[in-house]
Length: 237
Image (cartoon, rainbow, N blue to C red; front, side, top):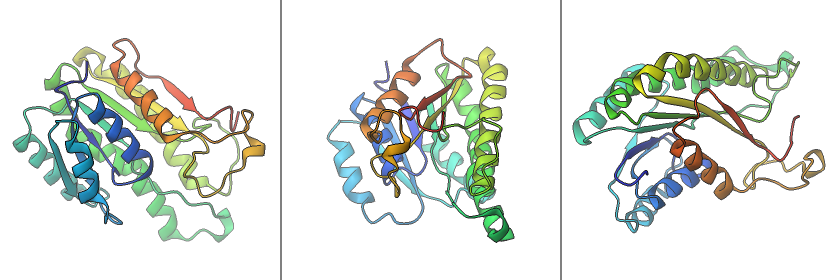
């Protein structure tokens, strides 16, 4: 179903983004990699993806700057026949007590999650509408949407909850344009800095390949929109 489609994955040079873009390429999907910093392995990744006989392109962009986002999507529109899938994966994480949080840190987390996701979605929508098979996957975190006090990750929690509300609103508004919008929220992954396996009911971390497979399955569904799907082994229930 994905063969010949074109997908943009933000933050695709490593971790979750890399796993997702590899899974999409494996399905025959042409892929557009976004990266910004820490991209030493990007050339190696491009070569790896080309073995799937798909078109691969890469752009280095600071997505927190709306003008750069606009330029990115102008390039995508010019250089690709279509854009069918957008995976909003980028989003900085900060665990810090609220009373020690700086104003700049607050803005950094909100900008790199909520605002960035809106910018990309805003400029992608005209292209996704033309596709007639438009898909948006927003990456959240386990327990997104639970209104409970989490003072150590407050700006991150606020941003991801905002993205969940955006996901649902877009799903409802864009159904008439055949653009399906969903959120997938991982818990503790195999590449996570902290691995509190005792706090996970299934007593193990999630595999990046398993998360990527779930993304592909959700994209392939023609009747799933506005959903929030957790890939977390029961973490944060």
